Image (cartoon, rainbow, N blue to C red):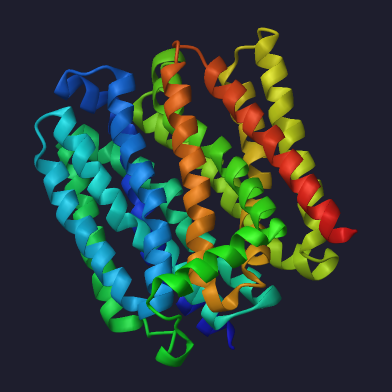
Length: 395
């Protein structure tokens, strides 16, 4: 397959994948403004983020399985359509309870866009080619955490927070157009699993019996949870504790996202040079070492924005190596049930991430320490899961 084909598929699938995360990243700069406008406390405002993540995680497992039964395109139409409808409701919400409920519905819709394109990639590619596609997809996907917070800050300052949801609605409608015009069905009828409980039970029995799959799922879950903890707490830590404006916060957030996705582009080279399995433990060691150093320094009283920003930048770059490779290695033995496997992985990862956001939000005390200690703990858990899993695979 030509490089032009890789690039075309990566752009299309990356943009569809980015729709759901856009509803998080563009939304982050608006959290303080929503609290002020709706007259609610920061931890209550964070419930609108947590509810999105819960739905975003739980319903991936449904969309992934449905895509194995009925093909890839139909679940995408249903999910993105719901995302658009819920986005309109969020824009019109006048109280936090309504916003939290509608964000849950929006998360259901966003789940389809994040999980089904992964199964499409698995349908089309394998091995190093699959790693290359995932890395290219993540480069396109990086538009969300790099540009969405900055765009959100402009929108909030100039038009108010409801305008963010109108923008998300337009993005969802654009995704439907892309799906209709440029995405072909990649799972023919003869390769679909039977639409009955016995087939579904067999698929999950296979996945839960695969200890390597479960180990990689947990390793990926804890590595991305570190980023989720930062995502949920950073709007308040950087704005309230360090005094950053909405614009400055957006730039700081984008820098960490840049580290993540820039490192992901090294995966093709690393996979060919050393083998995909061989890079996992060193990457996990680098991630855990840097985040542990950050936790120790703040425990000792070194409260500095630039110190935190620099170490987070370095630490999150290792997540960019870990996550795409884990996706590929976890799915390589489960091509026939790629949608179910990918959805189970993401559901576990997002449920752990949502719980971490909720716990860290409840522990928020106006200082960076709860956020940083949570990130450190997640990085250490990543190291343990990675070493246990890949030591066994190399044995």
